[in-house]
Length: 374
Image 1 (spheres, rainbow, N blue to C red):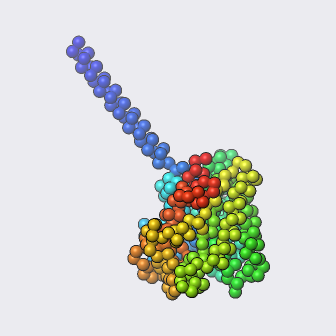
Image 2: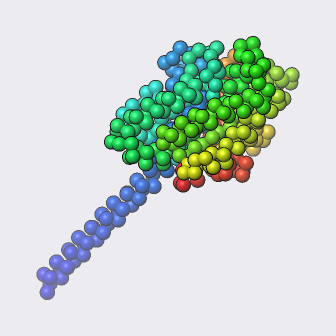
Image 3: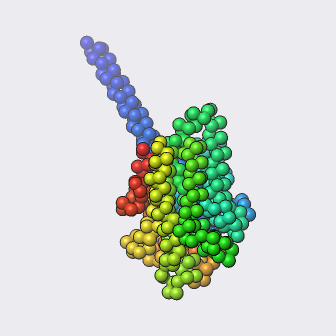
C-alpha cells in the first residue's frame, strides 16, 4: 500500500511537470505566432520619402548617405532622407516585421521573401523627372526591378503557382508624384511640361502613366495596394523660402496642383476595384494628414513647422542638409528635417494614421491594418 502510494505521488508529479511543459510550449508558440508579421512581405515603391539606400551607389545629387542624415537612426546614415526612421520604416514595424525592408540595391537570397524597397530619391512617375539631379530610378524602373524580384521568388519557392499564392498576400506601397511637381512641372527653366499641360492635364497625364505601372504590378502578382497621395509641397521649407513673403504662408498654387493629382489618385481606388476584382486598393491622404500636423502643430508636440531642422538660408530651405552640418538639437519639435523631408517624429504620426486612420479622411476606404488582414 505504502509503496503504491509513493508511486502514485511520483506519477502525479510527472504528469504535473508534463502539463507544465506542454503549457509552456503552447504559450511560446502563441507568442511566436502573435509576433509574426501580419503579411508575409512588404514591397515599397517611391522617392526620397521612402528611399533607404538605393541611391547610395549611383551618380546622383539626390543622396543622403552622410551625416547628419541618420543622426537618430541606430545604423547612422543609410541613405534615408531623415534624422531617423522613414514613414515606411514605421509601417513595417506596425505590420509586425522584426527588421526594416531591405533596399533593392542590397537585397538578396531569402531576404527578398519579406519584401523589397525599390524607392529612389528624385524619382518620379515620368521618366524625365529629376534628370537634372543625376541618377535615379523612375517608377517604371522600380517596377522592372520588381519583375526581377518576382523571378527570384519563383526560383526560391519552386514554381509560379507557389509564388503567386505568396505574393498575393503581400502589401504593395506606392508613393510617387512629389518630384513630378517639385523637380519637373514647377521648374519651367529646366522642363517644358508646364507649357505642354495645364495643371489638370498634367495630373491626368501622371495618373495615366501611374495606372500603367499599377497594372503591370497586378500582372506580376500584386493584389493589396496602398496608393499614397502627394503631400502639401507648397508648405515645405524649400517652397516657403522661394515663394512665401512672410516665411509662413504656404504656396497654394502648388498645393492646388497637388490636390488635383490626389483627387484623381483617390478615384483610381474605385476604378481599379471595377477592373481588378480580386485585388484591393486603398488611398492614403498624406496631404490631409501632414496639413493637419502643420495647422495643429502644438497638439502633436511640434513648435516649428516652417523651417528645416537641418539646412541653410531662409527657412533652412534654400540649401539642403550639408555633410557634417550641425542640425537642430530639439528634433522632436520640428515637423521638417530638411528642405523637403519630415523628421522621424512627423513620419511616425503619418505612418500611424496611414496604418489605422485617426479620421475617416485619412484613408479610403480603410487603413493599412485592415488591408493587411483581408
